[in-house]
Length: 216
Image 1 (cartoon, rainbow, N blue to C red):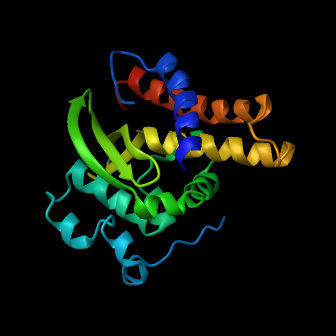
Image 2 (cartoon, rainbow, N blue to C red):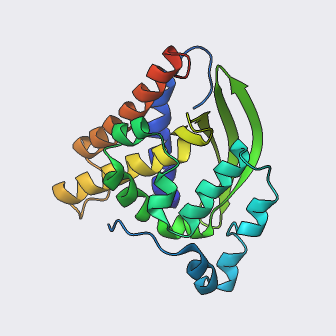
């Protein structure tokens, strides 16, 4: 995921910076695997990065931090439908629908198996909680990102924006578009880049609407 992620991240950042308002810095198969079986099957070096139930159990129940690590654990164990259940319905629509989100996430399954997030800070404003975190893995090094969550009517938590998810979705859009145009090309075409910007703009516009409405 290395150089592609860095390239796509720069593209997504340019889009998001233009749209974020009010001083807020918040910014393919459909079947998921069984988390317990995935834990057993994971090679020793991968297990060091995986987030297990015991670790999650140490976090305060019904806290946003616990929801964040539950979400990440599902990503690591390729439990895609469970992971996307943490995403706000509006975010999934802005990202091209749940099937597209799952296809994009599964395309980076090897990254999620070895990447591990570390929380850096938490900030609550206008009903939204933004977590800043660092993701580390052998291929990409350290990636600073942020994710914004809000309470659901049922008292749980849902993601309304995540910087790494935006990178993954934009990268998948660019890759799939370029494969249709010219899979042998060394660099993405302008049309492929436009596909990536479009998906990034959709997510950023969704976040902007929520911020304008006070997080509702």
